[in-house]
Each structure stands twice: as C-alpha cells, then as structure tokens.
Length: 165
Image (spheres, rainbow, N blue to C red):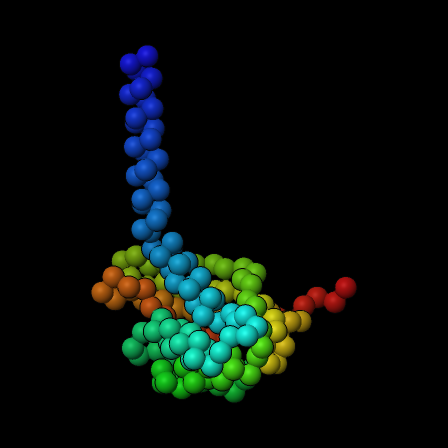
C-alpha cells in the first residue's frame, strides 16, 4: 500500500512537471499569441467603432519594432505600425461580421537564436471582400525579445482557392 502511494505521488509529480513544461514552452507561447491575433481579427455583429479600434491597436502590439507586413496579392506592404492598425481597423469597420479559422499551421523554432517561422493557412469569412471561398497562406516570422514572442515579418504567400466540388 505504501509503495503504491509513492508511485502515485511520483506519477502526479511527473505529470505536473510535464504540464508546466508544455505550458511555458515556446510553441505554446507562440500558439497563444496566434490565438490572441485571431481573436483580434474576428468580429461579432453589433461591435462598435471603439471596440474595433481597440482590437486593431491590440493586434498592432503583437508586432516587433521593426517589422514588415507584406500582402502582394492586395498590393499592400507596410513597416509602419499605425498604417497596419488603420488598415486592420478599416477592414473591421467595413464588415458586420468576421470569422477566422486556421486550416493548417506549421511552426519551426530556432531556440538558440530565439526565432521561429510559422506557415499558416487560414480562411476568413464575412469580411468586406468575403474571402469565404478562398484561404490565405502566410509566412509569419517571430522573434523573442525580453521574454515576449513578437511578429517581425508577415508575408501573404498565396491565395488558395477552395477546391470545386
């Protein structure tokens, strides 16, 4: 009986340590930042202008200084945080509802240099240009500074058309 209690204690301790390690891992921290970014893009019907502006500002805070955001299919590139924030706010204001769904994601982390590269494909629905039939594939580069992962490069690689059925 005493041995099984020790074994249970060891198993619980290992599980707690594994959970703590996962919770603080770079992949999990970057994943949380991505979730936050997606939440800043999404919009529910009835959202006001102040909330839209605040979410755009919060999205802008995820970017490092300096950064590059490039979307060649839409003839857009900026290195200016205020331009990015205004563009996001404008997109959100022109849309009654915006949904976002990550279809696939790959993350490669260079722990020694505190950098990461993510390839992400996402589908946005309900926006003012109604992207519902296509998905967008991005490359997102992250770097860690002062313990925080921030985005320093985004490139819209391609528009992926939905397969016809």
